Length: 153
Image (cartoon, rainbow, N blue to C red; front, side, top):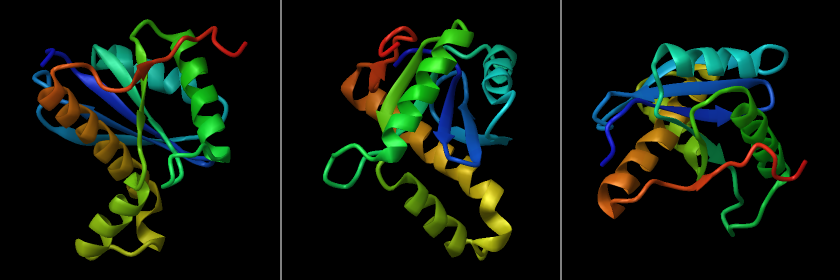
């Protein structure tokens, strides 16, 4: 397992959940929810610098069948743009059911959807990052695929 802080990112149409892990890559924790739009890439790059991130893990939303959806293309574009504005590598990892899992976890803790909108994005980012960490620990290889900022341009 590589040492170093990683950021986890859950890209939504209105908000972006951000999580981080400890230096040893054991546990993912929520950081913040970034409003989608002007300045979002800069804010995430700023967080990567602040935490001295080894890499950024962006969730790749796929349908349960594994097919791409409208959200898949948006997440890929966001990841490419992010990879172009900051030095840490950006990886994309399968995030199927992360938001569903996040909503379930929040409901189980007594929170409802209305008072959890901004938190659910952070929890989804935690789930994405924790899955990536667990994968790397068990497979002894980094998760997902590195994003090339020039691909698809």
